[in-house]
Structure formats: structure tokens, C-alpha cells
Image 1 (tube, one colour):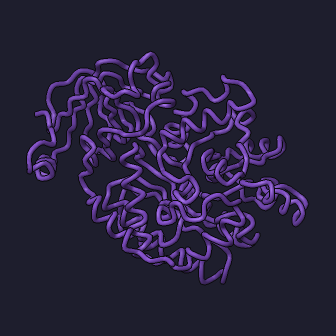
Image 2 (cartoon, one colour):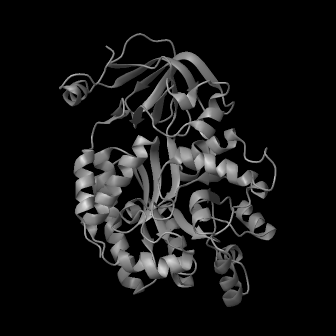
Image 3 (cartoon, one colour):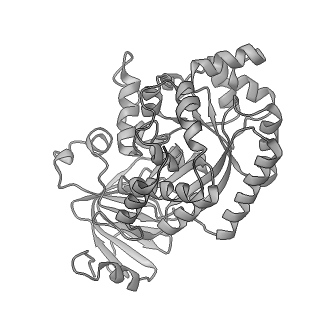
Length: 434
């Protein structure tokens, strides 16, 4: 059957048809993101349980979605964000990073509690799903509340509690308690990680503790690194070396480290990051808004560079399609128009992110996780279609049609299945911060 959302029984219709196979029929274009970057035409995608079973021509399934005149592509992966900072969208704009953190963000964050972070995360998830993000790498507080929102909304995530040195042992214990609470959810949608905020908010002893705990438990580490010129200058003044060299010398860097921003890097820094196989996250909108600078992508091509929005307090949205466009355009300024081509931007937002987060997604191939998005071609910003990838990166506004995560349909014809949007909006608007 071909499902539509017409009629009053839309949600119950999806709930009733809960069998294991979904068929995406007559896909006009499939942007595979496989090793050959193939774009297939007029093929079907068969999904069984939570994975892509095959690509070809098929007839029967428990659910059939007509994808004629539609693009099917991997869901986007936001490799650096702070989801609940949707609560601070538009609060503290037009300031430099240190002033913004010290005078606006850190003081208002003291008024947060688990309930606010739960609803702020839910608002972020609404925004991310509606703009095609199927997985995000988060660093924030009350990680168990973020996890609860993720499970309820059926979105994939890599979660870490943002850690700042202040009463070292108490904070470590709080983080470990949150990790145990997340483990109790027993969800295959959630991957645990560690989140030491930055070198300027963590002591050497805490950074070493994180590295040891990461090695013992095989956990990723999510950290801000070399985001501003001041961070680098202060580190050189204090330690006689750059932030990258400092982390290298204390044994912190490894293939498990995901380093956000990486704007101010020397050639020696880059050699060390490459040697340790560190994944970097480019956050162009946030870096521009906070005047932090521009990641030197032209000398980073041999590293795994991913893409992230940062939080909505410094972006101010979580739209990864917009981020891809900004990422590509910013690198071309004062350099060359061929730097960071559209395909490279798409790679950052899909397969590179999957590699960094160690998830079996980011491309459409048999055996991969069924984290997919469907885009209607019958819209002005997708016509004409001389180049599929170019349109996706440079012209599409992110208004996706349907989203599938872990083999489950979470949005169909722009209608969220598991989330009451209005309830989320009303709850956020009821909060008082000042």
C-alpha cells in the first residue's frame, strides 16, 4: 500500500503497520554517498528492521512510500552542537566568544534544570528532524534528560556531559551518575561519549582522567579546540605551546577525539592531529557570528573534517543544509572558487560525520543503518536540476519531506510522528529566565 497522511487516522495508521519492511519505491534520485559517490536513478530501496537491505527493484513490503520525483539521501549528521541551547536562541547576540560566555551564557545556564534541558533538547530535535538531521553529537548538562528526549523522539545521538573544572570530584561523580542513567535506557539510538569542554576550562589532571576513562571504556571524547586566537595565545603564555601541542604532550589526542572548531591551527598542529587521526568539526556559522575566524580547510584535506552547527545560541539555527552552504562559500572567500566543492560539503555532513562518530550510517548501501531523508523535487529551489549535489548544498533550504531513523518513519509529508510540536513550543515559551 502507498501511505498518505490524509484522513483523521494518520498516526494510528503508522502505529498499526509496525511490521519490519519499508519500501521506498521509484526513487527519482538516490544520493548514495558510497565510495564512488554514485547517484542512482529510478531505483527502489528496501529497508528491513533498522537497516538497508537492498537497492534495486522490489514489489512488496509492509509499508510502501512513493518516491517518484523525490531525492532519497543519507540523513545529515551534526557533529558538534549543544541541543538544549535552543533555549538561548537570540540571547546574547553580537558579542565575542569570551564576553558572550562569561557575561551571558554561563550566568543564565546556572538557572537551568533537568526539565528545561529536556524541553530545550526536544525543541532542538524538532528543528533537526524537520531539516534532515538524523544524528547529532551533543555536549551539554543533564545528559540523561537529553537522552530521554532522544529516545522519545527516535533520533540517533552521541551524548556527552559538558565538563568544566569546578569541584573536580563532585562533577566527575555527577557525570558518572548520568552515564549510568543513560545506560539504563538501553537504547541502540544513543552512544555515550565524554565531553571535557576545553583546555581553558579543564585542568591537566582532569584531561588526563578523561583520556584514561576513554581508553578503559572505549568512549569518544568531544572537546572544543583552538576556537579563538585568544585561546591559542593564552595557552602559549601559560604552557609555552599551542593547545594542540599541549594535548599531544599530555597524551590526550587519539582517533577517539572529536575536536570542534579548530580555527587557529599551525602546520605543526595539523601534523600532530593527522598523526593521531583526530576528527575535526567545522562550525562556519558560529565561527563567523562570534568572529572566531575561519577553519583553514585548504590545509586540512588529509584529515577527517566533519560539519556541525554548534548551539542555537551562537548560530542561531540547527539547519545542516544551511551549514553546508555556508561551509562551502566561506572557504572560497579570498581564495579560490574551487575550494571546498559541494560534494566535499556533503561528505562532511554525511560519511565524514559517520566515520568520526563510529556509526554505521552516512551512506545508502546494503547493511547500513536506515537513517534516510526524502526531499520533494517539486519546489522552486530544486528546479531546474542540472546537478543534484549542487542543488542540495547551494539552493535547498532544508525543508525535507520525510525522515526515517533506525528504520522507523519519524516524519512523513512534513508531519512529525512522535512529537507534539505545539506542546513543545508552549512549554518553552512558559519558561522564565530573567
